[in-house]
Length: 432
Picture 1 (tube, rainbow, N blue to C red):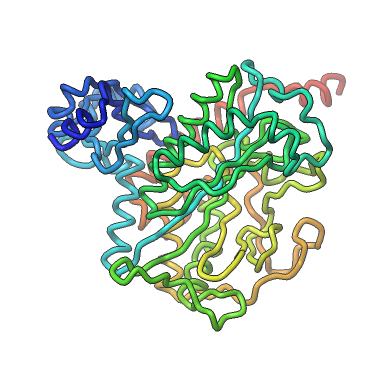
Picture 2: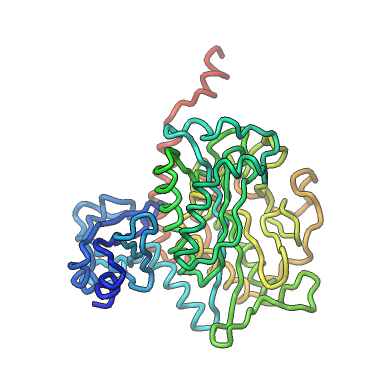
């Protein structure tokens, strides 16, 4: 009854009980606030086969059990609340449920006294409603990053989103026009990994909804335009002792400000990078962003090599300042829950096996030849899936049920993509 009481106090009439499926799509039921008490006890029933959970029509219902701590009142429609839910089936957590996977990883870290805290930078484009063009025809600079004029032309929408985040208590701290025409980013304060994943999921819903109210279409698609920079989702990572509220990654005596534990965690992420790519760059389109030949601005701002550096944006991992690192690999299609879980499991493996990454690179990875012994990121989604398939580290952490379900759906996605004949093929081989 806690959620029902809170809803009454806030004037919420309906609640969106929401979960994320394996492909990162948000699924919801709209529940009258007067009925939410029973849903909190039993969960809201869903036909699992109807969404991407690798279930069959013969399987029993999955029940979405709301987490009252995740409640968010819609800033643009305050009579509606959004609440993240954990998936249950036959009275047990659904093993491949993305939020359940993250909860399991968090519990494993907590048993060792660790708490993962993350902050995300979600880049997005504002397009025409048909999704074919940049929404602002005057946003046409060759190097549009931080373009003041284009930013202010979108002042009403960007500040509406930022004000909403302030209202929700997320502590937003900057808004900017990103490196592609029509591309923006809004940043808010980091938090515990589950809260950040919930917020990231809601943020995408919020941005798309508010953009629609302004006659625009927002997309987090990794690479919507061939010649423009793609949508990354950079993740800032630190590990904490929650009892003492101490950042375990910080070491002021280190040149980069990172502790031995931080380097080992980072080393684990590098060690599992190929398999991790199947999770954090999860679509066919993701590899258009990673392996773009170039953009009109002059740089893709996306990694190609499995490497790390100090404050150098051309590598997979950057250490911008002490006590944290930035993973630049992930993109806008990544499922927030699975991404955080996979990142945590790779890092814990690094700690367990003392995987120090060695000295940071000082090269411009976009132009320098790949040094001998340095690995490249997968060329495509199939290569990443094969790396994940043969992996044992993430399998142990994320669970066999999740891995089997995820690979089944993603291999089907690859086969579906491979069956299409593209314009490039007809342009280059029609007269062969």
